[in-house]
Length: 169
Ligand SMILES: [Ca+2]
Image (cartoon, rainbow, N blue to C red; front, side, top):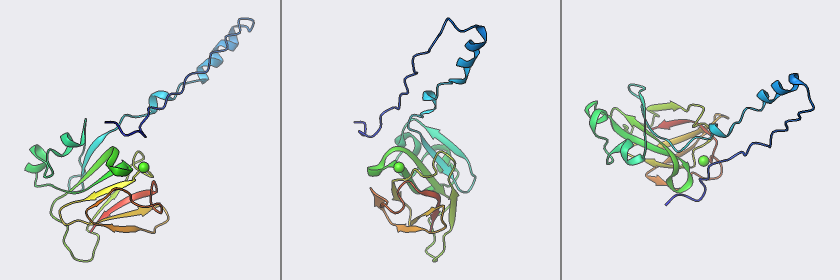
């Protein structure tokens, strides 16, 4: 059941114009036409720890979180899930799960921050909040949207595909 929105972008290389009439020097020009199709990534499912700044990726969200408490090394380290953010609405596409060392204290402060990497900037479309954490989404403008409590299949048109920093409070 693949979300319909995920189609691998395929740039079919324009037929190479091999003009045999041109002399040898012209042939080197074709090197400039480096194909970009390979840059289109498959979905990735990663876990980021705000405590250790460790970043680990997996084949699926299930594997990334192994039930919603994490297991294995992450749990051993005392980490719990603060939030999962998604590339597409309705929790589709790539996922990034943010783990925190403790449930978010309800102290009217943003306790945990994550500046998104190039891949995740301007990509978040839905979010899930866990472990008492509320999710705040910050666009480049310094404004913010939130708090998102529990599950939000749409973050809303204001912030959709505009988040550059995630905060957990
Ligand atoms: Ca998106």
